[in-house]
Length: 446
Image 1 (cartoon, rainbow, N blue to C red):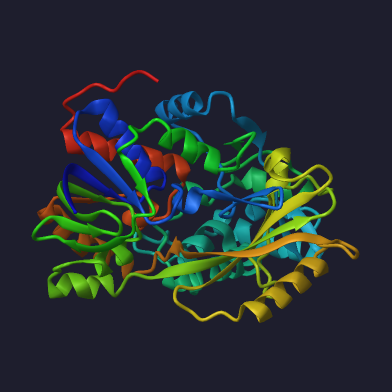
Image 2: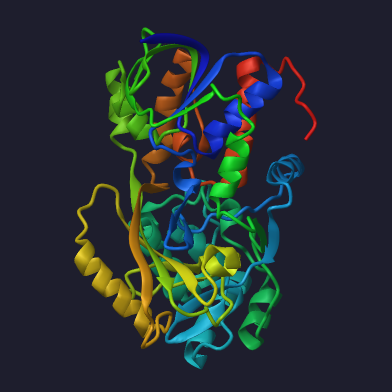
């Protein structure tokens, strides 16, 4: 079998679907999206189990861009609800509000004093500010002081990324790490401060269907022949511009868009020059082991999620799907996601990890005596987080220089090998489509 297309898109997650959607808005280019799974969605998809809807961990819509907000609302046709974030942190046997740096109220007095004193030293006795190349550890110490870093910033981020904060760069944090004012840090030490901080103080979530509802709404707007599922990429000959696709055979393309994890794409394609292959070997990631749980009682705290920085717990975050939408669980039940991070490629004994995880959930009272687990299923995300270590930026620059020579687009959270969120994936797809058509056409109104 052989076919030819103008644009071949690898992966039907949000960024890949967005490229296809916007190309159909902007041009008459023949486009094909191929996806190895039998449904589109990638890591933003959902599954149904025993009356529950489970996402691939928490996938929430933080909408800041007017265009993205307008488009997504038009796709979803009223199937969205706006929620005010209810996020907490578990430390020393107590829960305090997120973000930690602005909310130490309720913790032991010695902990509050240590965090507040360390922060105030950064304000009134500042040291030279770290430069652009500072580690995340140095950046955090400069912004928040020793107490906040020792209690939360360092242990939590070590758990999440799987490497010491001194090995992480600070370029990823941007909007993701809130920076409260001194008056707000002081208020949050003395009072139960309810002010929202950060980019995700409110978020949208589908009323029905979990995060898959957004995927399906976007995919339904493509021409029927544009999307092929159950079509794994077997090999891409970059010199000949031919992709070998399971079930499709040879697909000849003029332009190629990759949204697969960058190392996976490079391993399936070639030829690559030696220095570019060396750069690929410097890319690191963390695998997220997500334990989805369905429980035979309602959730009684109202939390959307909570962070767990302490080493006594194997998980770094626990979220409640059924608090995003009651339709995610049967009546009288609740559903959770429990996230554990491990280095990419590391061997994991799931039996031991499950035992430790369930024990930790009982210890912090997420699970209670007598709870019956209606559903218990591990859902691994092989490439969960791109590691922003000091090798990443030069490696990505070398790889993208070669991609530019070949006219290949590599976009999205994993294709661009970066830390990002759902709205950005959609906008990445729009920008890519505009580059592919040279901004020659006008998009249809939402």
